[in-house]
Length: 225
Image 1: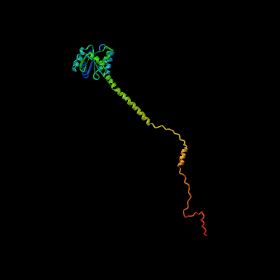
Image 2: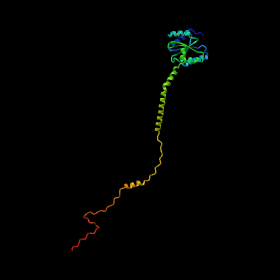
Image 3: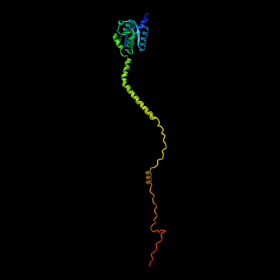
Image 4: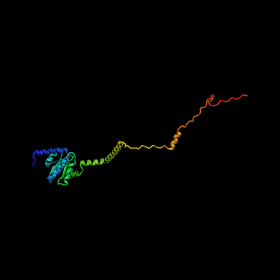
């Protein structure tokens, strides 16, 4: 069913807006796709947050001119679908390139950084890694040594936690039997006896000079002749 003039104007405005906002634009000839394949194409574009619009070549030329881009869509073969992306410049080319391997879809040209590019150029772009893939590759390179260092730190942390846990646990109670009295050795007994002070003998009291013993007999006086 032919589009009305108003519908064509609305499509043109959408194209102008996307031409201005997208650093990369890719054109694909979708002629020959069945309904299931066309639905799969739109689904993949939606999942990749890519605008995909089918339009007549005349409308494409009018929108490109209004957006300030010199481009002639009439030189492109087949029926044209346009993929716009403002986030990942390579993603639309990759999706279209992948679908072209299993369907009749063909990449036929594009606009990159405001300049028209040919079919070979966009096919080459479609084989490059996307932004997300490049980002993952970059992280794997720079995080290689870092991840090893993190693993070492984690091992040290676990070892420290285990040590602190063991130190925090109360010591186990050890039941000890009452020790039997130890017999003193003969040597110790000898030392003990030697250490005792010797008993001091009691001395007889000596009478003081001039005092006579009460028990001693008095000396006889000599007889004078």
